[in-house]
Length: 102
Image (tube, rainbow, N blue to C red; front, side, top):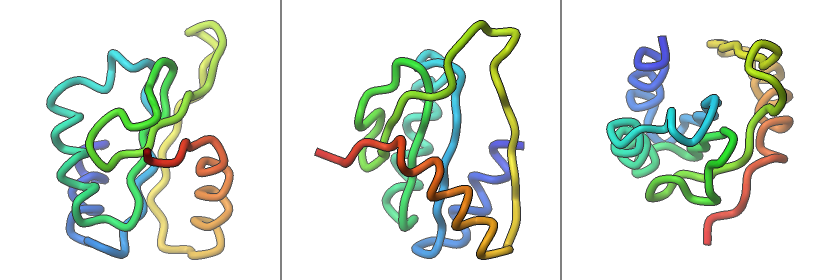
């Protein structure tokens, strides 16, 4: 599912905003880093959230810590919508956690 959403963001180009949550920094693997760097070259905003992720986990990608707590209580979800108000509310909530690029 994540690859499908990433491809759609790539197709949207400069209008795309991609906010992805990873359980831990280890889940943001080398192949993922490369894909997200490529996405950041064309998308308006790309961020990766996860425990242990640094401020710029890949070139052009903004990082932030993610949800914390025991593994069996962590929250995971995804959404694909073109409802602008819903997108803005969700994005605003996540973007408050994102660190600025250096």
